[in-house]
Amino acid sequence: MKPKVFLEFVEIKSLIASVLPFVLGSMYAYYNYHQLHLGYLLLFFIASSLFHMATNANDNYQDFLHAPRNDDNQEFLQETNVVGVNQISIGQARTITFGLAGISLIIGLWLVTQTGLPLLWMGLYSYAVGYFYAGGPKPISQGPFGEFFSGFTMGFTMGFMIFWIAVFINTYDTAAITWQSTLAVLIASGLAIFAISNIMLANNICDMDEDIALGRHTILYYLGKPVMLQVFAWSYVAGYACLVIAVLMGVLPKFSLLTLLSIIPVWKNTRVFLHKQVKRETFTISIKNATLICLSFIVFMGLGLIFN
Image (cartoon, rainbow, N blue to C red; front, side):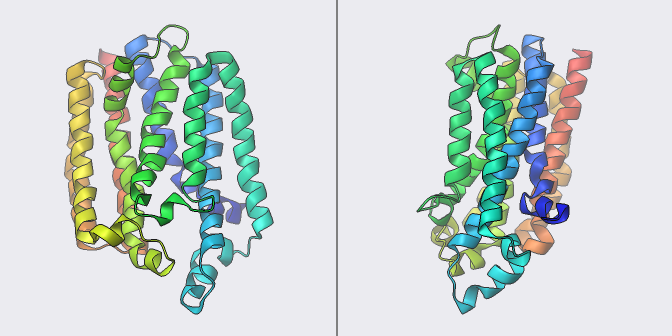
C-alpha cells in the first residue's frame, strides 16, 4: 500500500483530536500535581496515536463492509469510501487495523504493569467503544444512539479519557483516583470534550442523506437536522461553561479564561455551518473550531503555568 493511501485510510489529519487532549492533560497534571513522567507520557502518546489510527481504519472498512450492495450505493462504494476508491482489500484493511491496535495494546499493557490497574480499565473502555462504534454485528453508528456514542468515541474517549489517562500516568505514584478528582478532570476537560464531539456530530449532519440511503437511522433521522444543529451550537456553550467552572474550582489557572476570546471566531464559523451543511465545503469548520479552541486553551493554560 502506498504511503498516501495508508495515511488517507487511517485519516492521519484527524490525529490532532487526540494530540491536543494529551497535551492538555499533561499540563493539568503539572499545574495541579507539579510532576511529569516524560518516558511514560511518550509511550502513551505513541499508543493513543496508533489506536486512533486503528479506529479510523476500522470505521472506514466497516462502513465499506456493511454498505448495501445496490445501485443507489455504487457512488459511495466506488467514489467516496477510501477502501473502494483505492481498492484496498478487506484482508489488507483488517491487517492494518488489527496491527495498529495490537501494537497499541502491547504498549498499553506494559504501561499498566508500571502504573497500575486503573489504566487497564480506562484502556479497555476506550478499545471497546472504538471497535463497537463501527464494528460488530450491529454497529452503534447505525442506530439512533450513534451520535451519543460517537460523542463518547471522539468527545468523551478523546477529550476526556486521553486527558484523564495523561493525568493518571503523571500522578499514579502520588495521587489516588477519587470521585472528586475524577469530577475535576471531567469538568476541566469539558471544553475539549464538546469541541471534539462536535466534529463527529458535524460529520453525521453532513452525511444525513447518505446515512439514510445506507440504512443508518441515526438520531438525526428521528429528531431532524434543525434540532441537531441547535445541539451543535449549544455544545460549544456548554464547553466554555465547563472552562469557567474549572477555573472557579481552582483546577485550571486563571489565565485559561483568556480562551474565551476564541468565542468570537468560533461563533463566526458556527454561523456558517448552521447556514450550510455540505461535507466538502463546511464540515472542516468543526475541525477548525476544535483546533482553535484546544490550541487557545493550551496557549493560555501554558501562560498560566508560567506566571502562576
